[in-house]
Amino acid sequence: MGEWAFYNDDFVLESNCAVPASDLAVQRGYGVFDFFKTVLNKPLFFDAHLLRFRRSAEAMRLPVNKTREELKAIIHQLIYKNELPDSGIRLTLTGGVSPDGFTLGKPNLIITQQPLAPASPALESGIRLITYEHQRQLPQVKTIDYLMAIWLQPRLATACADDILFYTSNHGITECPRANFFLVAADGTLVTPGEHILEGITRSRILRLTGENVVEGSIALSELKTAREAFITSTTKQVLPVIAIDNQPIGNGKQGPITQRLAEKLRKEIR
Amino acid sequence: MGEWAFYNDDFVLESNCAVPASDLAVQRGYGVFDFFKTVLNKPLFFDAHLLRFRRSAEAMRLPVNKTREELKAIIHQLIYKNELPDSGIRLTLTGGVSPDGFTLGKPNLIITQQPLAPASPALESGIRLITYEHQRQLPQVKTIDYLMAIWLQPRLATACADDILFYTSNHGITECPRANFFLVAADGTLVTPGEHILEGITRSRILRLTGENVVEGSIALSELKTAREAFITSTTKQVLPVIAIDNQPIGNGKQGPITQRLAEKLRKEIR
Image (tube, rainbow over all chains, first blue to last red):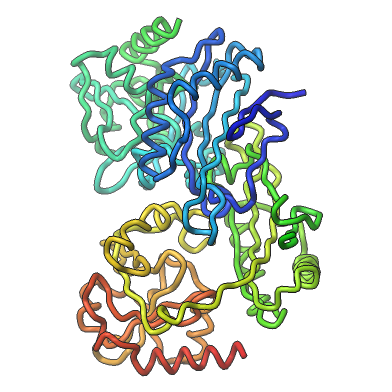
């Protein structure tokens, strides 16, 4: 029968959950979302995700119309109804039905829960990235805009790569479409881009776990050649070692010790 | 009872026309569209719009799954059912329901028809633009991505302006979010940006109407100061004079003779 979802004020079957074709999400790609995991029915970093969702909505001038406590109660009910202990929960807030196809309407709120596929063991031993010059629009806001990321997918297959690493000529390396990027430089410094990115919740956990031993700063493309290690972080991927970028190995082409230690620390925190 | 629309294979009431919440348009802002007018039930520049729609879909790897003749037959039926002689018709093709929220699904096709509000007389006497540094993603493709355009709307109110004019430091002036831009330079040359833009159907009509007396080339921001005239073109706006940009008058701050002549020529062609 499929999962339950929540639409505006009601629980509905996910398979029946639909958005008016005249919603600005469909017409103009205008909306925000957030996504978090549940482990044994417990939402991970719940407050941080709900806060970021609200901030994204505010930045896009979309009223949430639910308090934090109301959202939490709805999500707990959803978890209770669906009985999917290990899952991904997504909140989406759309631009709403517009009177003229351009002016913001009353946002539609969609909350869905899906079973979460376990991370592929192949990826856990290390992934391969390709770089691409692009800057996400409003990078600090978790909008639904993944146009370039999806459009670029065929390049991954051609290049035998797993994901894309965005950079710009002005700001150097920024992020992957759905993950943050960290690098252990030649001198052993752990560094992650601090601007023109989405501040990931997993990224902020890693910053906290490493304490002062991390620099938020710019990374030039040329630094990849001499890097000792690299990894990406995201809600679904947690910490994944990067073993090659543009077909050049990072370090010795295997997961490095700093990556391994941080991945283990994060796993412990989540357990 | 509202207008009829067409969804995938069926005519439905527009008010009932909805897209699955799991469609990539809603989840990832991934889709294309096109938009044209009907005058006395006759679609304007029909073939040009249908061709551009197909090319946009191809560029985004979205199969249309209908021949040109099938699309035309559906649209003629829609016109017959709705009895809206002067209207705007929009075709939208979405990324479809994705198995994993990222890989392309089977696209959903939506065709809607709406009565078209007559152009505001206030705008016809000339509009005011403000410049903003931004490059649309995949500019040559008519995607549903209007994130920046909608996000920037409050600035228009603050600046008492009617629309935005995008530029980049590399390529100069490109286009408005929903219209192309033309300028009559200090030496009398008519020029319009030739790259990093959406090639509008009205723009191409203007290029044809002016014959060889137009240059497709780059326009630097600094050229606005000395410009004699400027105007924008679009399906809904046709030709609209631009009388000020960033609060600086263009020419004498009124519609110029070249703009007026081209607007009149286009009106004649449409009649």
